[in-house]
Image 1 (cartoon, helix red, strand yellow):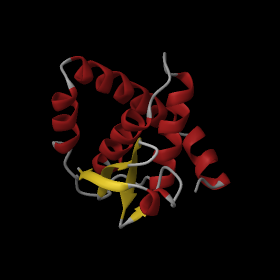
Image 2 (cartoon, rainbow, N blue to C red):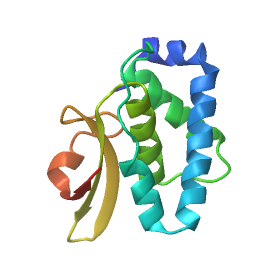
Image 3 (tube, one colour):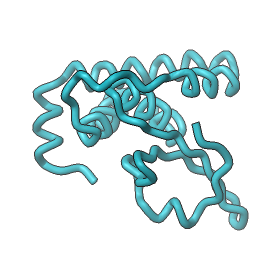
Image 4 (cartoon, rainbow, N blue to C red):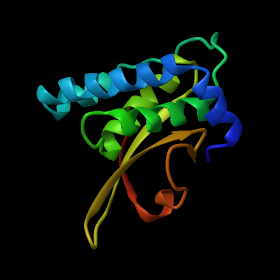
Length: 134
């Protein structure tokens, strides 16, 4: 969950929000080539060596802030894909999880770090059946 400390820390790093905004745009471009291309783009994001001091909460907050300023509503898959790639770029082992619920049908995507959801509600782990982990 977002803390006040993370919110203020991110405000001091507007480049992180800008990077998230461009990530949202890059995902839209990849999606034009089809879901397979966007899927592969997220799968190819590798965890880099931790060297930059950035709290995962700051990255989640920056992506949420970028979604506010983005040109269209960013669905959960787009938001989670960008969050996953940014977290990995900053040395965090993040997983994009895509799940579904059968009745009534619903699908959702979220990000997990060490088995804990970082960008959404924790109950999604119990409500949804996992389709894929990237």
